[in-house]
Length: 330
Image (cartoon, rainbow, N blue to C red; front, top):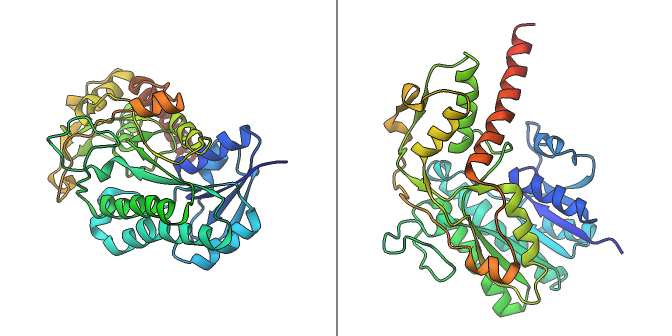
């Protein structure tokens, strides 16, 4: 009998890659889709699965709509990827972030408890929960949390709620503490995509400069297409657990820029300028994950290097920008 899975945040980067991964595994995939005024299906279309998923109208802020979605989808696995996921925005919209990112996860858990407690639940936790912890240069499942943004705080609430629902109601709830993971489907507001899009535009002569904030911040960047496999692997285990998913390598934004500009034969120093307005109220200087547990217990390992990832993103953005220029010149 065909397995079914329900995904919140299905139109986002991770939702699209996870949908394709599960469809390739033979799953029937359903997505909880909040109605928006702008088109949101482009990522699923990019991967060729937009017509292979079934959308159910609902919202993370409305537990009754989640219950309805569970009744329709009858999932064996529930992946909660939905959230207000941009760290910078969380300072401007802290209440919205708390409702969608924090209480949204609680609504999912409560919906499962009330309908079918046997559903396996995946909660998308984040490395931003670690935040400012200089005494712990390598972050693992046992590292103390110290979130430095409303987004990180909201994710930490969702993380502990997932653990609490397992301990209180025996709901199979796994938390994947994913470090930064990128792709050609990343939103333009995230720094990696901001860089690769700018590189493409500068190379094609439609832009002169790239403005960034703290380019000495260090991040552990991987490929989203690799990371969604880890989500699935967690739910195939006999017992739920918490796993850090990361590459185990950290790179500065500056070095990432160098890789990006070098790919198109340019020197980043000629184009990158610092704009203090992009600095965050509370910065996280270093994030570096220890994926040892996931490697040993799940057999998971990232397959894509940062250089391969950045080059993949630049090639996709070059194609996009060329198409834009062509349309503008018609």
